[in-house]
Length: 246
Image (cartoon, rainbow, N blue to C red):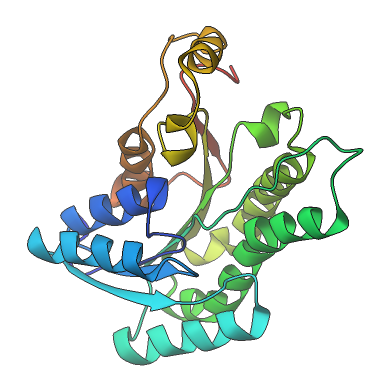
């Protein structure tokens, strides 16, 4: 249980981030639901948490912005006095073949997916060190392990996030702070819902378990890493992918 804990989840308005926020709240954590552009979705997540008896607040911040992230963290710490759990989930895609990919699309994905996580970890690190405890969970992807055609920017950002996870884990381990990554495979979100039945079948054929995962599959692993059962686990990448990257 996470009663008395404060969790901050970036990009928590929809999809995997929303499910993570709902799950951590059900475990007893007070949840800061971060969003960038989707205020209505974030408010809906907060409303669901509150209706389930939990505690949550939606706060806007573009985590790719270094100064804005610093102000965001300061705002949270002033109100809640601490953050026990940081989930770096915010992410974007700008898919294209490398020969057609613009510099703008490459930078946009790296700025949010990788620099955004760096910004949040950096600005919260002093607080984590002071309390000598904390759980940092970065949402990577099997694309960062296997690569994926048409996703050079996304795969690079997620591979970088895995490297960031392992490096920060080594830096903070002696202070009782664990840093781990969760690498989802194909998950049933708005993006996969838009695929044709034929495309879904092709996807399923690449998954040893023969089915697409759900946001709850990812959220349950995040909840484990956020709890005391994972206290002796750090620097790890846990794939939630039905066996794709085994």
